[in-house]
Length: 328
Ligand code: PMV
Image 1 (cartoon, helix red, strand yellow):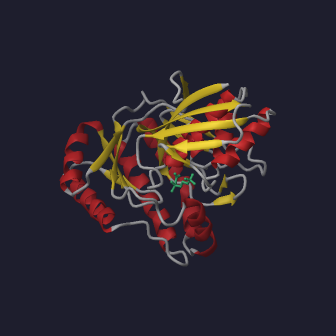
Image 2 (cartoon, rainbow, N blue to C red; image 1 turned 30 degrees about the vertical axis):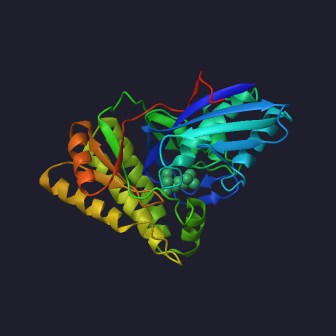
């Protein structure tokens, strides 16, 4: 059977950084994110005896090696469904892959939804989130509409580590995220390697874990009340704490480029002028600027004036879902 799914990337407001189980992808801390309507992956999966082996193509390029565990994820779903047929997977993304813009989140969310249906599995939203998590942690959140929390869970089998929506996309349409693309090339240190290194060697990782639950409580309350300053300031602080732990690993992991710092400084000065904006960054050099819809045009203009050619504006978006048009 053939199925196609669409999923948006998500940007964390409270980050996930560190695993308590590397194989099952179980996080050390819970996290909160916004599903971003402008950062989309569409994936078609077909299981058939016609195919001699599994094949995966992403943005027109055949994926030869399983560097991102995509083939392993297909195998997991095939086993769950109890089928022996091989899969053809074609995927398209409308934003740069592997530049710290959560492409693995939308990628594994779309793959999970499409592959499960194509393999004849009928899973609940919660189980889809659990399965997507095993491809890439942050993918668990891309299943969810609007704003999501990924519960770290406590069980060793991971059955309570899943994401759920805490607010619909309609709840806070004015909360926007502008992805300022500083560099489109792949990062040097993957988040997988970066997390493990941080846990092992950064003296500040403990500080990260000690404060993250408080950040979650504040962000959840801020989303509930649509309090932009509360959400923006806590999200910014949270990202800085994560980067502080990354930078103090041995060897240090510095994802920032000079342009990233320029944007950070600019955002701070805009705020001082009264143009409300905050920044957050993932494991890469791109900077995501949070603002209210009314200020989006002005902030985009200012980011472009700083020499940022590509600014992708996102509003809260849909969770992963099936669509009718197939890619092949
Ligand atoms: O799911 P991964 O392995 O792509 O890790 C994501 C890590 C961060 O983007 C830095 C934080 C997050 O919560 O999305």
